[in-house]
Amino acid sequence: EFRSMIQFAAWTGVRQGELFALTWDDVGAEAIRIRQSRKLDGTLGLPKNGKAREVPLLPPARVLDDVPRRQDSVFVFHSPRGKPLIKGTHGWSWQKVKAAAGLPQVRWHDLRHFCATRLLELGVDHFAVSIQLGHTDGGALVMAVVATLLHRGWVREALSHKGTVIAYGAIPIAGAQLCYFNAVTYLPVGVALLLEYAAPLLVVGWVWATTR
Image (tube, rainbow, N blue to C red; front, top):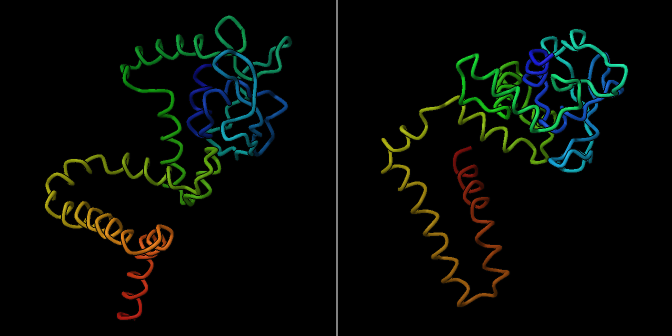
């Protein structure tokens, strides 16, 4: 059952508490419905962000036929003693699995990163991936996390080009803030903020107008 749980979590990207609270009534032929999450104190509540969602079941995630249905429980996954999962009992089993696999550094949350990476490799767009994972940022976090995972040498590469990073990063930001603080001595704060936030749009518009 635990092996099926790992594979299911890796290919659906559900959060740990959502996995613990998944019932057989939430499982469909093509998708699962995430409508609740088990909290740290063992109680059930809404998923993070307070929104229910549907998660499609890709072929690798269709392993629930290998999970036995218990007559005395509505939940899909259980502890080795047959009790509904909570963070403590799940963590104990996860530590044993990691040790046996020789991967003590792997976190359960890394399965969500695995899911996001694989979905993007399959051609799913960032926005759809963010919805599947339960994010409400339109895919910004997915892009940031996956870019870090796929390009693991980004810190070393950035340090090797620190002059360019400073020239095109820190200096413009510092310059923008300096101009803003100078502007508020002559303009209302609202107008100064409007000019600061509109500046990137003005620059992009100017480049577009002069290069098209």
